[in-house]
Amino acid sequence: MSRVDFEPKHMKVGVLTAALQELTPRDRRDRDPDLAVEEWLSFAEEVGADSIQLSAAFHPELADLPPEALLDPVANTLDLRAPLDSVRASRVLAAVKQTNVEIADVAFFDNMLHADPVVRQKKLDFMLRVFDAAVLLECPAVCGFVGKHEGRTIEENLADFESSFVPLLREAKARGLVYRVEQCPMPGWTTDDSFHNNLAYTPASWIALHRICERHGVGDQFRIHYDPSHAILMGQDTRSIFQYLKDEGFAFLIDGFHVKGQVVDPRGLSGWGYGGQTLGRGDYVGGSPSEDPADLGNAWKKQTAICEHELPGTARHDPLAYLTNRSVDWLDHQLAARELLEIDFERAPLIVEHEYGPARVQDKDLLAPILKGSIEFTRKIDEAAAAMFALQNEVLPSQGIPVQGVGREAYRS
Image (cartoon, rainbow, N blue to C red; front, side):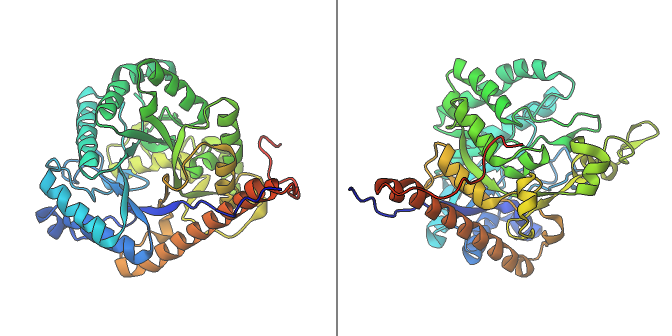
Protein backbone atom coordinates (compact mmCIF):
# COMPACT_ATOMS: atom_id res chain seq x y z
CA MET A 1 0.00 0.00 0.00
CA SER A 2 1.46 3.37 -1.03
CA ARG A 3 2.00 6.09 1.51
CA VAL A 4 1.08 9.74 0.98
CA ASP A 5 2.69 12.20 3.36
CA PHE A 6 0.65 14.75 5.28
CA GLU A 7 1.33 18.00 3.43
CA PRO A 8 -1.38 20.62 4.05
CA LYS A 9 -1.37 23.69 1.81
CA HIS A 10 -1.96 26.96 3.62
CA MET A 11 -3.14 30.29 2.26
CA LYS A 12 -1.37 33.58 2.91
CA VAL A 13 -3.50 35.83 5.10
CA GLY A 14 -3.66 39.52 4.27
CA VAL A 15 -5.62 42.63 5.17
CA LEU A 16 -7.28 45.35 3.09
CA THR A 17 -5.70 48.68 3.95
CA ALA A 18 -9.10 50.40 4.17
CA ALA A 19 -9.27 48.84 7.65
CA LEU A 20 -7.40 51.93 8.87
CA GLN A 21 -7.99 54.74 6.41
CA GLU A 22 -5.83 57.43 7.96
CA LEU A 23 -3.00 55.38 9.44
CA THR A 24 -0.78 58.16 8.15
CA PRO A 25 -2.29 61.59 8.94
CA ARG A 26 -3.56 63.42 5.90
CA ASP A 27 -1.25 66.41 6.27
CA ARG A 28 1.82 64.13 6.18
CA ARG A 29 0.68 61.80 3.42
CA ASP A 30 -0.50 64.52 1.04
CA ARG A 31 3.03 65.95 1.06
CA ASP A 32 4.59 62.48 0.78
CA PRO A 33 2.13 60.24 -1.09
CA ASP A 34 4.02 56.95 -0.64
CA LEU A 35 4.49 57.28 3.10
CA ALA A 36 1.04 55.81 3.70
CA VAL A 37 1.97 52.59 1.86
CA GLU A 38 5.25 52.26 3.75
CA GLU A 39 3.55 52.75 7.10
CA TRP A 40 0.74 50.32 6.21
CA LEU A 41 3.29 47.65 5.30
CA SER A 42 4.92 48.15 8.71
CA PHE A 43 1.54 48.01 10.43
CA ALA A 44 0.64 44.82 8.55
CA GLU A 45 3.87 43.26 9.77
CA GLU A 46 2.98 44.34 13.32
CA VAL A 47 -0.46 42.68 13.23
CA GLY A 48 0.86 39.46 11.66
CA ALA A 49 -0.38 39.74 8.08
CA ASP A 50 1.43 38.03 5.23
CA SER A 51 0.17 40.55 2.70
CA ILE A 52 -1.91 43.64 2.11
CA GLN A 53 -4.57 44.35 -0.43
CA LEU A 54 -3.55 47.89 -1.32
CA SER A 55 -6.54 50.19 -1.46
CA ALA A 56 -6.58 52.86 -4.15
CA ALA A 57 -9.35 55.43 -4.42
CA PHE A 58 -9.89 58.97 -5.55
CA HIS A 59 -8.30 61.51 -3.26
CA PRO A 60 -11.02 63.03 -0.99
CA GLU A 61 -10.78 66.29 -2.94
CA LEU A 62 -11.52 64.44 -6.21
CA ALA A 63 -14.15 61.91 -5.08
CA ASP A 64 -17.63 62.11 -6.61
CA LEU A 65 -19.25 60.68 -3.47
CA PRO A 66 -18.71 62.07 0.05
CA PRO A 67 -17.85 59.60 2.85
CA GLU A 68 -21.21 60.07 4.58
CA ALA A 69 -22.98 58.54 1.56
CA LEU A 70 -20.92 55.32 1.82
CA LEU A 71 -21.58 52.29 4.00
CA ASP A 72 -17.96 51.16 3.96
CA PRO A 73 -15.60 54.08 3.33
CA VAL A 74 -12.75 53.49 0.90
CA ALA A 75 -9.14 54.51 1.36
CA ASN A 76 -6.62 56.02 -1.02
CA THR A 77 -3.68 54.35 0.72
CA LEU A 78 -2.08 54.27 -2.71
CA ASP A 79 -2.21 57.91 -3.75
CA LEU A 80 -2.60 58.11 -7.52
CA ARG A 81 -3.29 61.81 -7.98
CA ALA A 82 -0.09 61.54 -9.99
CA PRO A 83 0.70 58.24 -11.76
CA LEU A 84 3.02 55.89 -9.91
CA ASP A 85 6.46 55.94 -11.52
CA SER A 86 9.49 53.65 -11.22
CA VAL A 87 11.10 55.82 -8.52
CA ARG A 88 8.02 55.70 -6.32
CA ALA A 89 7.53 51.99 -6.99
CA SER A 90 11.13 51.22 -6.03
CA ARG A 91 10.58 52.93 -2.70
CA VAL A 92 7.44 50.86 -2.01
CA LEU A 93 9.09 47.62 -3.11
CA ALA A 94 11.97 48.34 -0.74
CA ALA A 95 9.42 48.52 2.09
CA VAL A 96 7.89 45.23 0.90
CA LYS A 97 11.32 43.60 1.11
CA GLN A 98 12.07 45.12 4.51
CA THR A 99 8.79 44.06 6.12
CA ASN A 100 8.43 40.76 4.21
CA VAL A 101 4.77 41.71 3.65
CA GLU A 102 3.59 41.18 0.07
CA ILE A 103 1.17 43.30 -1.93
CA ALA A 104 -1.44 40.76 -2.99
CA ASP A 105 -3.13 43.12 -5.44
CA VAL A 106 -4.25 46.72 -5.84
CA ALA A 107 -7.95 47.39 -5.23
CA PHE A 108 -10.20 50.13 -6.58
CA PHE A 109 -13.85 49.54 -5.67
CA ASP A 110 -16.13 51.70 -7.79
CA ASN A 111 -18.88 51.55 -10.41
CA MET A 112 -17.12 51.02 -13.72
CA LEU A 113 -20.41 51.24 -15.66
CA HIS A 114 -21.60 54.51 -14.11
CA ALA A 115 -24.59 56.05 -15.92
CA ASP A 116 -22.96 59.47 -16.38
CA PRO A 117 -20.49 59.12 -19.29
CA VAL A 118 -18.17 61.79 -17.90
CA VAL A 119 -18.06 60.17 -14.45
CA ARG A 120 -17.65 56.73 -16.03
CA GLN A 121 -14.68 57.86 -18.09
CA LYS A 122 -13.10 59.37 -14.98
CA LYS A 123 -13.36 56.01 -13.22
CA LEU A 124 -12.10 54.04 -16.21
CA ASP A 125 -9.11 56.37 -16.56
CA PHE A 126 -8.33 55.97 -12.88
CA MET A 127 -8.55 52.19 -13.15
CA LEU A 128 -5.97 52.30 -15.96
CA ARG A 129 -3.74 54.24 -13.57
CA VAL A 130 -4.35 51.44 -11.03
CA PHE A 131 -3.35 48.87 -13.68
CA ASP A 132 -0.08 50.65 -14.35
CA ALA A 133 0.66 50.93 -10.64
CA ALA A 134 -0.01 47.22 -10.15
CA VAL A 135 2.51 46.37 -12.86
CA LEU A 136 5.19 48.59 -11.30
CA LEU A 137 4.48 47.05 -7.89
CA GLU A 138 4.87 43.55 -9.39
CA CYS A 139 1.31 42.53 -8.54
CA PRO A 140 -0.43 39.80 -10.55
CA ALA A 141 -3.89 41.31 -10.28
CA VAL A 142 -6.19 44.17 -9.46
CA CYS A 143 -9.46 43.89 -7.57
CA GLY A 144 -12.68 45.84 -8.10
CA PHE A 145 -16.32 45.84 -9.17
CA VAL A 146 -18.01 45.66 -12.53
CA GLY A 147 -20.90 47.94 -11.57
CA LYS A 148 -24.09 48.75 -13.46
CA HIS A 149 -25.69 51.54 -15.50
CA GLU A 150 -28.56 52.56 -13.23
CA GLY A 151 -30.80 53.68 -16.08
CA ARG A 152 -30.67 50.42 -18.01
CA THR A 153 -32.07 46.93 -17.54
CA ILE A 154 -29.80 44.02 -16.66
CA GLU A 155 -30.03 42.78 -20.26
CA GLU A 156 -29.07 46.22 -21.57
CA ASN A 157 -26.20 46.25 -19.09
CA LEU A 158 -24.82 43.07 -20.63
CA ALA A 159 -24.36 44.95 -23.88
CA ASP A 160 -22.84 47.84 -21.94
CA PHE A 161 -20.44 45.40 -20.26
CA GLU A 162 -19.38 44.13 -23.68
CA SER A 163 -18.78 47.59 -25.11
CA SER A 164 -17.28 49.30 -22.05
CA PHE A 165 -15.84 46.75 -19.63
CA VAL A 166 -14.32 44.29 -22.10
CA PRO A 167 -11.95 47.01 -23.42
CA LEU A 168 -10.82 47.49 -19.83
CA LEU A 169 -9.99 43.79 -19.67
CA ARG A 170 -8.02 44.12 -22.90
CA GLU A 171 -5.92 46.74 -21.17
CA ALA A 172 -5.42 44.34 -18.25
CA LYS A 173 -4.36 41.59 -20.66
CA ALA A 174 -1.87 43.90 -22.36
CA ARG A 175 -0.26 44.44 -18.95
CA GLY A 176 -0.32 40.77 -17.91
CA LEU A 177 -2.91 41.38 -15.17
CA VAL A 178 -5.99 39.58 -13.91
CA TYR A 179 -9.07 41.58 -12.88
CA ARG A 180 -10.55 40.02 -9.75
CA VAL A 181 -14.19 41.05 -9.39
CA GLU A 182 -15.81 41.26 -5.96
CA GLN A 183 -19.45 40.24 -6.04
CA CYS A 184 -21.15 42.71 -3.66
CA PRO A 185 -24.59 43.60 -5.09
CA MET A 186 -24.11 47.19 -3.80
CA PRO A 187 -27.79 47.84 -2.94
CA GLY A 188 -27.06 51.26 -1.45
CA TRP A 189 -25.53 52.69 -4.60
CA THR A 190 -28.96 53.94 -5.67
CA THR A 191 -31.99 55.46 -3.96
CA ASP A 192 -34.37 53.52 -6.18
CA ASP A 193 -35.63 50.00 -5.46
CA SER A 194 -32.80 48.22 -7.23
CA PHE A 195 -30.87 45.76 -5.03
CA HIS A 196 -28.43 44.31 -7.57
CA ASN A 197 -26.30 47.24 -8.75
CA ASN A 198 -23.17 45.26 -9.61
CA LEU A 199 -23.66 42.90 -12.55
CA ALA A 200 -21.25 40.30 -11.18
CA TYR A 201 -23.21 39.56 -8.02
CA THR A 202 -23.83 35.81 -8.19
CA PRO A 203 -22.37 32.65 -9.84
CA ALA A 204 -24.83 32.48 -12.74
CA SER A 205 -24.03 36.09 -13.64
CA TRP A 206 -20.27 35.43 -13.34
CA ILE A 207 -20.63 32.66 -15.89
CA ALA A 208 -22.68 34.84 -18.27
CA LEU A 209 -20.11 37.63 -18.06
CA HIS A 210 -17.20 35.23 -18.46
CA ARG A 211 -18.73 33.84 -21.64
CA ILE A 212 -18.83 37.37 -23.05
CA CYS A 213 -15.18 37.79 -22.07
CA GLU A 214 -14.25 34.50 -23.71
CA ARG A 215 -15.79 35.63 -27.02
CA HIS A 216 -13.43 38.61 -26.95
CA GLY A 217 -10.30 36.74 -25.92
CA VAL A 218 -10.13 38.10 -22.36
CA GLY A 219 -11.63 35.20 -20.43
CA ASP A 220 -8.37 34.66 -18.53
CA GLN A 221 -8.50 38.25 -17.28
CA PHE A 222 -11.95 37.88 -15.65
CA ARG A 223 -11.86 36.19 -12.25
CA ILE A 224 -13.80 36.45 -8.98
CA HIS A 225 -12.53 37.66 -5.61
CA TYR A 226 -15.15 35.79 -3.58
CA ASP A 227 -16.64 37.38 -0.45
CA PRO A 228 -18.96 35.13 1.59
CA SER A 229 -20.63 38.08 3.31
CA HIS A 230 -22.48 38.88 0.10
CA ALA A 231 -23.65 35.30 -0.27
CA ILE A 232 -25.20 35.46 3.21
CA LEU A 233 -26.81 38.79 2.28
CA MET A 234 -28.63 37.04 -0.58
CA GLY A 235 -29.55 33.84 1.30
CA GLN A 236 -26.79 31.71 -0.25
CA ASP A 237 -24.12 29.52 1.30
CA THR A 238 -20.51 29.07 0.22
CA ARG A 239 -20.58 25.30 -0.26
CA SER A 240 -23.56 25.42 -2.60
CA ILE A 241 -22.03 28.31 -4.58
CA PHE A 242 -18.78 26.40 -5.04
CA GLN A 243 -20.67 23.21 -5.94
CA TYR A 244 -22.70 25.14 -8.53
CA LEU A 245 -19.53 26.48 -10.14
CA LYS A 246 -18.04 23.00 -10.25
CA ASP A 247 -21.23 21.49 -11.68
CA GLU A 248 -21.29 24.14 -14.42
CA GLY A 249 -17.60 23.67 -15.27
CA PHE A 250 -16.47 27.02 -13.87
CA ALA A 251 -14.65 25.99 -10.69
CA PHE A 252 -11.64 27.95 -11.98
CA LEU A 253 -13.36 31.34 -11.77
CA ILE A 254 -12.63 32.12 -8.11
CA ASP A 255 -9.08 33.42 -7.74
CA GLY A 256 -9.01 34.93 -4.24
CA PHE A 257 -11.08 35.56 -1.14
CA HIS A 258 -12.24 38.37 1.05
CA VAL A 259 -12.67 37.10 4.58
CA LYS A 260 -15.63 39.17 5.67
CA GLY A 261 -18.74 37.79 7.24
CA GLN A 262 -22.36 38.82 7.55
CA VAL A 263 -24.64 38.28 10.51
CA VAL A 264 -28.33 38.30 9.60
CA ASP A 265 -30.71 40.07 11.96
CA PRO A 266 -33.72 37.70 12.15
CA ARG A 267 -36.00 40.49 13.37
CA GLY A 268 -35.07 42.74 10.46
CA LEU A 269 -35.43 39.83 8.08
CA SER A 270 -38.92 39.14 9.44
CA GLY A 271 -39.91 42.72 8.75
CA TRP A 272 -38.36 43.24 5.35
CA GLY A 273 -37.17 39.95 3.84
CA TYR A 274 -34.00 39.60 1.81
CA GLY A 275 -34.78 42.72 -0.24
CA GLY A 276 -34.11 44.85 2.82
CA GLN A 277 -35.94 48.05 3.74
CA THR A 278 -37.85 49.28 0.70
CA LEU A 279 -39.60 52.40 2.02
CA GLY A 280 -39.31 55.04 4.71
CA ARG A 281 -35.53 54.80 4.69
CA GLY A 282 -34.83 58.52 4.90
CA ASP A 283 -33.02 58.79 1.57
CA TYR A 284 -36.06 60.59 0.09
CA VAL A 285 -37.28 64.04 1.08
CA GLY A 286 -40.58 65.33 -0.26
CA GLY A 287 -40.94 62.38 -2.60
CA SER A 288 -37.55 62.83 -4.31
CA PRO A 289 -34.00 61.68 -3.55
CA SER A 290 -32.47 63.96 -0.95
CA GLU A 291 -29.69 66.35 -1.92
CA ASP A 292 -28.01 65.77 1.45
CA PRO A 293 -25.29 63.08 1.15
CA ALA A 294 -25.91 62.01 4.74
CA ASP A 295 -29.52 61.23 3.78
CA LEU A 296 -28.40 59.31 0.71
CA GLY A 297 -26.44 57.00 3.00
CA ASN A 298 -29.82 55.71 4.20
CA ALA A 299 -30.20 53.89 0.88
CA TRP A 300 -27.97 51.26 2.48
CA LYS A 301 -30.88 50.24 4.73
CA LYS A 302 -31.69 47.84 1.92
CA GLN A 303 -28.80 45.93 3.48
CA THR A 304 -28.29 47.17 7.04
CA ALA A 305 -31.94 46.66 8.05
CA ILE A 306 -31.44 42.92 7.75
CA CYS A 307 -27.77 42.29 8.58
CA GLU A 308 -24.42 43.58 9.79
CA HIS A 309 -20.89 42.92 8.53
CA GLU A 310 -18.70 40.58 10.57
CA LEU A 311 -14.96 40.85 11.10
CA PRO A 312 -13.79 37.19 11.20
CA GLY A 313 -13.66 35.98 14.78
CA THR A 314 -15.90 38.68 16.25
CA ALA A 315 -19.25 36.87 15.88
CA ARG A 316 -20.19 34.11 18.30
CA HIS A 317 -19.82 30.51 17.18
CA ASP A 318 -23.37 29.60 16.15
CA PRO A 319 -23.92 26.22 14.42
CA LEU A 320 -27.62 26.91 13.81
CA ALA A 321 -26.80 30.23 12.11
CA TYR A 322 -24.30 28.39 9.88
CA LEU A 323 -26.86 25.79 8.86
CA THR A 324 -29.52 28.41 8.06
CA ASN A 325 -27.09 30.62 6.09
CA ARG A 326 -27.36 33.50 8.55
CA SER A 327 -23.65 33.68 9.33
CA VAL A 328 -20.51 32.39 7.63
CA ASP A 329 -19.32 28.89 8.57
CA TRP A 330 -15.65 29.78 8.20
CA LEU A 331 -14.29 26.26 8.56
CA ASP A 332 -16.61 24.85 5.90
CA HIS A 333 -15.90 27.90 3.73
CA GLN A 334 -12.20 27.05 3.61
CA LEU A 335 -12.82 23.31 3.40
CA ALA A 336 -15.35 23.60 0.56
CA ALA A 337 -12.92 25.76 -1.40
CA ARG A 338 -10.33 22.99 -1.27
CA GLU A 339 -12.82 20.28 -2.12
CA LEU A 340 -14.61 22.01 -4.99
CA LEU A 341 -12.54 24.81 -6.56
CA GLU A 342 -9.47 24.90 -8.79
CA ILE A 343 -7.14 27.24 -6.89
CA ASP A 344 -3.44 27.34 -6.11
CA PHE A 345 -3.95 27.79 -2.38
CA GLU A 346 -0.37 28.74 -1.67
CA ARG A 347 -0.67 31.64 -4.13
CA ALA A 348 -4.26 32.90 -3.90
CA PRO A 349 -4.87 35.73 -1.39
CA LEU A 350 -7.05 35.37 1.71
CA ILE A 351 -7.77 38.98 2.63
CA VAL A 352 -9.34 40.13 5.89
CA GLU A 353 -11.70 42.97 4.99
CA HIS A 354 -12.63 44.83 8.17
CA GLU A 355 -16.10 46.36 7.87
CA TYR A 356 -17.66 45.49 11.23
CA GLY A 357 -18.85 48.98 12.15
CA PRO A 358 -18.53 49.00 15.95
CA ALA A 359 -14.95 47.70 15.72
CA ARG A 360 -13.82 50.04 12.93
CA VAL A 361 -11.83 52.15 15.37
CA GLN A 362 -9.54 54.53 13.54
CA ASP A 363 -6.82 54.56 16.18
CA LYS A 364 -3.77 52.45 15.36
CA ASP A 365 -3.09 51.35 18.95
CA LEU A 366 -6.71 50.32 19.51
CA LEU A 367 -7.14 48.65 16.12
CA ALA A 368 -3.91 46.62 16.27
CA PRO A 369 -5.12 43.95 18.76
CA ILE A 370 -8.45 43.67 16.94
CA LEU A 371 -6.75 42.97 13.63
CA LYS A 372 -4.20 40.68 15.26
CA GLY A 373 -7.01 38.58 16.69
CA SER A 374 -8.96 38.41 13.43
CA ILE A 375 -5.88 37.59 11.35
CA GLU A 376 -4.89 34.86 13.80
CA PHE A 377 -8.43 33.46 13.78
CA THR A 378 -8.43 33.43 9.97
CA ARG A 379 -5.02 31.75 9.81
CA LYS A 380 -5.99 29.01 12.29
CA ILE A 381 -9.28 28.34 10.49
CA ASP A 382 -7.40 27.98 7.21
CA GLU A 383 -4.81 25.72 8.83
CA ALA A 384 -7.56 23.52 10.28
CA ALA A 385 -9.29 23.27 6.89
CA ALA A 386 -5.99 22.49 5.16
CA ALA A 387 -5.29 19.74 7.71
CA MET A 388 -8.75 18.22 7.28
CA PHE A 389 -8.49 18.28 3.51
CA ALA A 390 -5.02 16.73 3.39
CA LEU A 391 -5.96 14.03 5.88
CA GLN A 392 -9.37 13.17 4.40
CA ASN A 393 -8.61 13.57 0.70
CA GLU A 394 -4.97 12.50 0.44
CA VAL A 395 -3.58 10.56 3.39
CA LEU A 396 -6.54 8.32 4.28
CA PRO A 397 -7.53 7.41 0.69
CA SER A 398 -3.94 6.41 -0.08
CA GLN A 399 -4.24 3.76 2.63
CA GLY A 400 -7.79 2.67 1.82
CA ILE A 401 -9.19 4.14 5.05
CA PRO A 402 -12.74 5.55 4.85
CA VAL A 403 -13.61 9.06 5.99
CA GLN A 404 -16.23 9.20 8.72
CA GLY A 405 -19.59 10.94 8.56
CA VAL A 406 -21.37 12.95 5.89
CA GLY A 407 -20.41 16.59 6.40
CA ARG A 408 -22.24 19.69 5.24
CA GLU A 409 -24.02 19.13 1.94
CA ALA A 410 -24.61 21.53 -0.94
CA TYR A 411 -28.15 22.42 -2.05
CA ARG A 412 -29.65 21.00 1.13
CA SER A 413 -33.09 22.29 2.11
